[in-house]
Image (tube, rainbow, N blue to C red; front, side, top):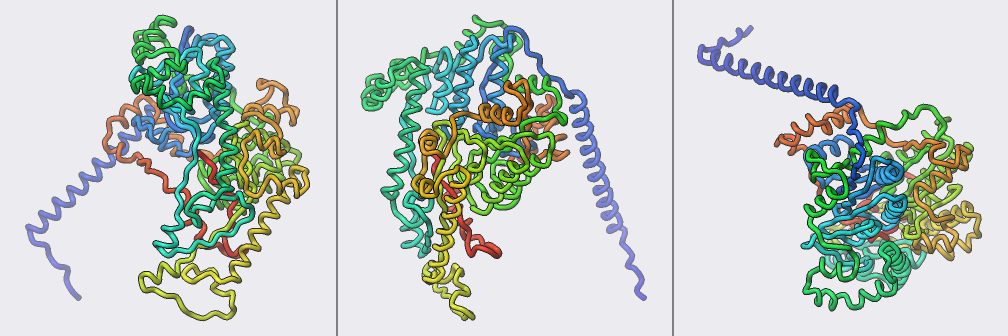
Length: 631
């Protein structure tokens, strides 16, 4: 039996020092942890439900930063942390929040006017912008003064600013209305000739152009014809909206684009001066001059930023939330948001999951207090099976006796239309992008690409069909025939379901389908949409169908969404508290925790990658109802 080795005096001293250092390190870490925990609890205890009061003579400052969305795609913890650190790259503005603030301000006697700063917002389409523009026009019509200011404006921002009584532009800023465009990259030469990747495309419909970049070097004539048709409709409506808001001659506004270069040259390249000459803005002022104007017209407040009495959009929303009664088990209208690409399984907000979105709809069906549902759709579509999972839940809701109304946002095309078609009523904005009824499938093969580096595939199979979907082998004619049959069957399913849901002959549906994209106005003319209206109109319709009342005050609305975890709720409250902002805003460690927003990978190549993902059982390859029809 071996005796344990004795430590020498030097080793014992070193080990003792090491143990003491470890103990000290753990002690300091624990003290810091519990100290931080106490600070969090203290911040939560002091913040509580305190809401900034709205004082008489206040100016509501609407100056949101970030992307206008239907639903937050960034988790609550990251959002609160980014806000505390002043990182606007992860910022998002919910359409519903903007609309309810504008609606409440109309009748709030404490709000005298609105300062509109939309020059730091970005948008994904024109339907949602027009909905906000309508709310701003209603606010202005109620007698509340709206003053818009921006350092510069793009087309979407300007449509909102145009609704103001007065528009001011920074003298060093500028704006140009340039029209709509849609350009894409085409990869055929790079994939097939350079890399040796063969992309086999299967589709129905000459207008289903979503996958053209993989097999062509330029857009097909059918794609250009269809795109220009719906884009011209949206552009002409945009010009009409601007002309109406600014009291301009629509013909002169349209004609101004023919002389745009010469007109800017005559203004000596001064875009701000050019905008003033065109009467697109009312004056050129700096932010300090705007603040002086609001002090003169409103109530001076030396303690407030800018020197005038004000309340921010977030502060006003917090006030509205604080005055709302808690929603119990009262009968109400539920809203489920389907925003983003449609993919299989459980997906976070910002992406529509076949299972996760279906689960939200099932929750509404099982909740006896939900008497009607509004599905807000802003999606280009995606996987066919996931779309069908969601559509089935819509049908189940109707069978349960609960009316379902669809409200289309900027985009509800292909799979986005698939999940919408069975609603009792479909609302869209005239500038919504919809349609694209069609499906396609892709199989990329890499045999030639592997041969370029000296790799070849060989082996045996028990049937001629076995191994046919191996992407390292050339695609056999038999596999191609099977895939085309699957796609044609999928197209018959799509058009057949549309025909059944819309009570139209299949031939009539096929005539407006074949993958063709329409604006909301064009879709209504062709019977794919029932009526024009935004989210508020759809909710009112659903409430009326459920006999909950005719006025918004008669019923309540609840959004069914993924619930925050206890940690997200705890940390979110701490991060937005005054103490949390102070601590996090000066912490280099905290700054390193903020996720950096990286450019999104090209959607086309991402779709190609998704087409390669193996699928277990059933269909031999994934089929897509997807529309690349954004701006």
